[in-house]
Image (cartoon, one colour):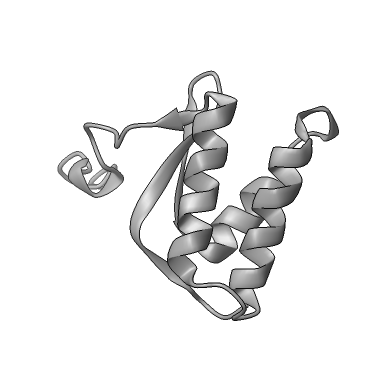
Length: 100
């Protein structure tokens, strides 16, 4: 797939304690395609269609980002940017290696 990166990521709650960072169009499409059948409705269909149209170049990338964000908001799974980003967490000194 050809990478189409959003200007800012969108954070969506995947499960109770798992937040997924959607950074590009491919992430958005994957997230939507992985949704359970019971969560698919007209809002889901419109969002997925918008993402596919953006992927094919028929809609701007920003429209797809706005659509996935609006989907998250309507479904109650939109999360504000987490306070701790993955790149902020440092590994323990030594990287878990034990000296011989």
